Length: 358
Ligand code: 13P
Ligand code: SF4
Image (cartoon, rainbow, N blue to C red; front, side, top):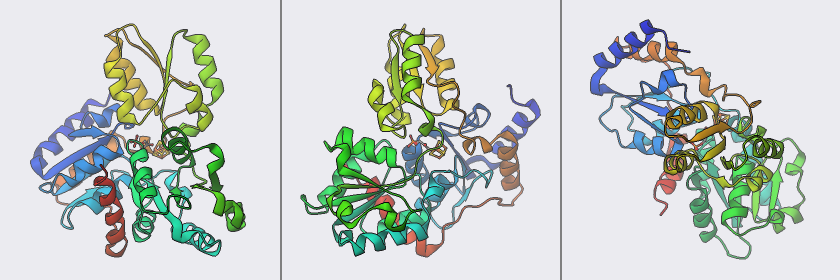
């Protein structure tokens, strides 16, 4: 639906009043009405780099979810303020790994005698606490666009025969990357369930594993199924199925292409006129791409019509953005996301390891 013209005018005016003092970042899964006011759009990796590259902006308004704003705060200087227009914009996947649970997991690994051969790799989609844990234990952060490079780096840090990675918190990205990019088999992966004693794993299972996957998933991407792939192939003969690596392994195996949001965008940009695509990622992005490329004769469909928007990404809407920008222009910082210094120290180390990956 078209945006309220009054809110559009107010957002424009507040941005104008703030000028270069504010920089607005917009994740690809954000609503159209919000993306319109983003100074730069990107996936979580690009936005982390963009935040780090804006030392002159007094305010970074992050249109995305909580863990992204935390990462931006970690990567910017202490006097820069990062604002999340709605504090309820969390991420259900990030919430699936708490600091207490991960500390307990590390104890379980230590008891099984494997923690010294294990490097944690945490997906960007995790809290600052988890990133800090990862940095403290010699690990790195990754995103969906550099997960293979992060795993390659992690396995270089340990004994090639006995070394392991504890992958947090998305089991699907961890498994898909291990199997597709690292030459591992599904049997090399075990799943640590934080709700079971000892993660539901025996010490032998932990010793034999190469990838210890945290039992987390994305509530949006986890809903695409092999049935949705089969149905779309029937509905659109000749279709190319392209999915995000947060989808289940069997869905990725049934698809034709797999990659991060930036990869999806670049692939569709390069696709020839007349080609047909079914995309398994967040709906705001798929709709925008379908509209953008319809004129070029590229037919782009959403992989499964029963899957919804990411509800927390959608919390950021034009009214919240206007409120945040007008408050800043009036001299009041609202919804500042600030990671405490102790947590920040090791979280930053882990993020910098990621940014330094080849
Ligand atoms: P990327 O932006 O790294 O593709 O991650 C997708 C996602 O789920 C962000 O919340
Ligand atoms: Fe979290 Fe999934 Fe939403 Fe991304 S799309 S913010 S991983 S719930």
